[in-house]
Each structure stands twice: as C-alpha cells, then as structure tokens.
Length: 159
Ligand SMILES: C[S@@+](CC[C@H](N)C(=O)[O-])C[C@H]1O[C@@H](n2cnc3c(N)ncnc32)[C@H](O)[C@@H]1O
Image (cartoon, rainbow, N blue to C red):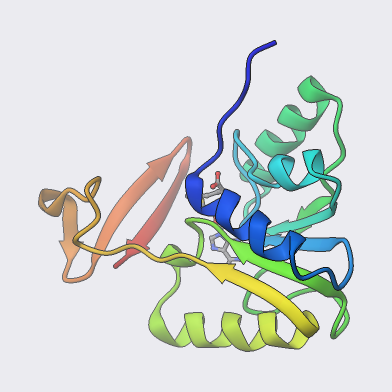
C-alpha cells in the first residue's frame, strides 16, 4: 500500500481537534480540486463536508471520491455566504483557498465561519505571504496579486 502524505499543517490541526472533541463534523471552505484535503479528515473518522465556488473544481474532487470510494459531501457554495445553518460544525478549515479573497471578502468569510462554527469548535485558515518559499515575485500582476490558471479557470492569488 502507498502511504499518502498531506500538508504538515493539517496534521497539526488534526492533533488539535482530536484533543478538543466537540462533534465529528468538519467543513472545508474551498474544498474542490484533484487532491481534496478533506480525504485526510474522512480517513480519520470525521463526517466531512466541503464547499467550493467552482463547479469544475467540485467535479475534480468528485472524480477523486469515485476513484477512492469515499464520500466527502462537497457542494457548490461560497465561503462568503456559507450554505449551512449556524453552529453546525465542530471544526472548519480552509487550505490555500482564502488566498483568492480580497481583505473585505476575507472578513466576510471569517464572519461566516464564526457563524457556522459551534461554541468551543476550532478553525484553521492559511494565507499566502511573499516570504513563502514557493512564491515567485515575477508573476505579480498587480501589487499584492498574481493570476493563477487552473484548466479553463483563472484565479487571483492575493498575498
Ligand atoms: C488553490 S485551490 C485549493 C483547493 C484545495 N483546498 C486544495 O488544497 O487542494 C482554491 C480553491 O478555492 C476555491 N474558491 C475560491 N474562492 C472561493 C469562495 N469564495 N468560496 C468557496 N471556494 C472558493 C476555488 O474554486 C478552488 O477550488
């Protein structure tokens, strides 16, 4: 069997949430794409839910689920207006997805995450910095922005 490794920060988040059990429900904001990180939490016994704004990215995640025979419940949704009731999730994270939002949009998304997170729940978000070793300054299109292409879609990365 081939062991798959996920980004190290997700192992840290898993450790925190396992030592702070509130419920088993976890939401990934920006969950789509060919390598859905939710699979990691699913494999560790969590009831997983995801939202993504892009139908193409959701389709890629669905293909992954079919190929790996898992169920991740990824639906179309915008993290600035999360389509779930208040206090529904014990845990919420967003991995390399809030990097597409402006500062105002980030504030909207954080308010929404706070709304759907239950009391005592935990949240993990990551952002992009110019100090990131993978960051290529030559690709900067506007100050603090660069264009990222995936398939037919273009995303703005903000840092
Ligand atoms: C760089 S991909 C990362 C995907 C996944 N988290 C991963 O690590 O493989 C960023 C994802 O964020 C999604 N996204 C961008 N803006 C969003 C928004 N406002 N709400 C939900 N998803 C969003 C994109 O469609 C894309 O699937």
